[in-house]
Image: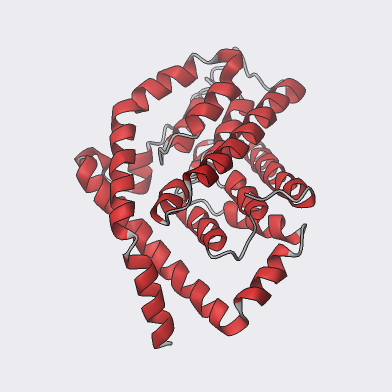
Length: 284
């Protein structure tokens, strides 16, 4: 047990400076560009999924919440909302960067998520014809900082420190659990149990992705880094993961049937995409 704790601390503590620098840059980006992004997505019109796909890739932790609020005002279509949910990755980017994952691999992951997200959004808007034009639906607006109690208004530095401490705690806990499981079961056995099942892997990853907070992207990213899951399974989970976007959707949208439909579409796209990638032997 002492060896596991020591290994966990060594693996986790070294990430702190990388996490802090990454979150500092992300906070700067979010504070300086969030209003511009809001205006851009509002003006996107029929190109919503394409614009949403591009903006969803930006490392802004509250973007899925912003998209949810825009959808509740029927400013964007359901296709654009789904695209943003699929392309955003919550804590994936800072974790992969802090773990020194090759930039080429990170770009490929983002590119796959972008393609799947945009294509899915366009298809959804065309087939379901869910444009919602002319409807004025007034719903409660939920601000990300208010919802997460992160006090972003206190400044970039304090916000970056809060995010770093919060995510470090998640990483520390998850790394400890992973090390404990790997020690008792064995890395090869655990990996083969998930990776050799081309159906079960994406299904499980998708369920983890539905967890409506940063824990899900942390878990999925760490499993990939530890080589417990394949890149296809990782992408499946990250596609489903929309941060707290879904949580806010269920809170502000009184139409439970619509919420369930959006969640089911998101989960279905993520799992099916993962299964297809597994079947064709996709690797990064």
